[in-house]
Image (cartoon, rainbow, N blue to C red; front, side, top):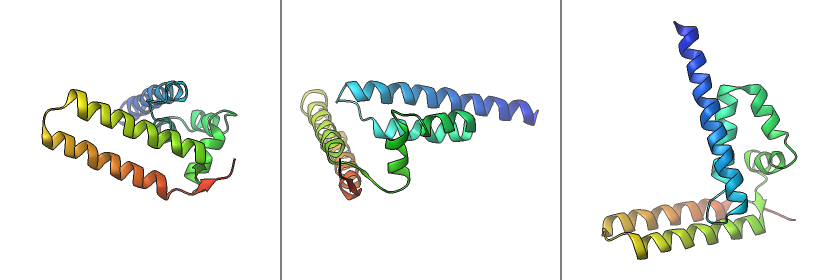
Length: 128
């Protein structure tokens, strides 16, 4: 029974990792979607679901450097920071202005935007 449960758990991590990777790929093209959190989630899920897939992701020529720079604390490029901050504030602003009437939800979204922005700004900036 434990083997089946473990196998299902690994498959769920692989599925979630693949979905996250897909959303992260879309985020590369659409600046309204943040790429970094989805790529990091994919890496974390693959690490738990399939070390082989995780290794392929972190050594991938497109994503590998980006993920490793973040995970090893080297940071992200200035352009990536700018795009991330712009996207976060654009989407939060649009949501608050056009889609939310509840003041508590507006405050919650603003708090999330401030927290995420603070995290991004505290990351080291890589020179291009």
